[in-house]
Image (tube, rainbow, N blue to C red; front, side, top):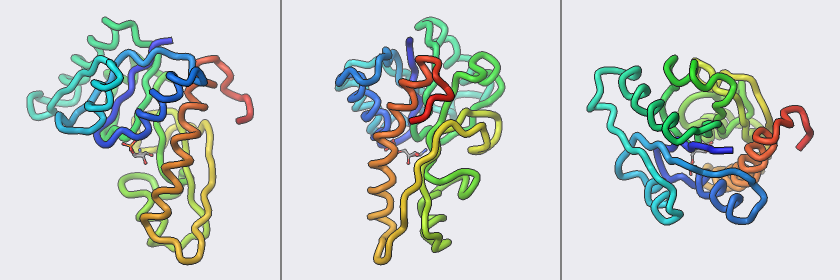
Length: 193
Ligand code: GRF
């Protein structure tokens, strides 16, 4: 199956997916990186892995429909089957949702529905909850509202800092996300992980 990854920033989850493909634990073709920030390190990772990338700047477009139409053109040209959001900091609009309904997933660093939106790790830390975690979910038109596919919890221990919590969450993300993508591409939505 052909996968497009969308990222806006560092792209460590994108890297985890590339590494899993390289290791043979994820059987997929990562055919495209879509990125809305020209300077993002995710683009560097794509270049290093010889993955084609499509970079755009929203300022060059009238609205979301305009740039999503262009993205959709690229996805169709490459016959992309599945879209994986990995730190893509924009809501997906109707143009892409209609074309890829049920085939777009996202990873979010909290136990949704708790702490949706930006800085979920900071939100959980500030709320002094005993545990938070990671959620992989289908994407709908809302902010982190789609159907949950998999969750992993992470304890917030005494003496935990926001930085140490972030590191723990990222480790869990990098393990969980490629495994979920592999499972979904093989059509085993309900299988226990
Ligand atoms: C991750 O924490 C992910 O859950 C959230 O954005 C972050 C992206 O990190 N959606 P990276 O760019 O993959 O390093």
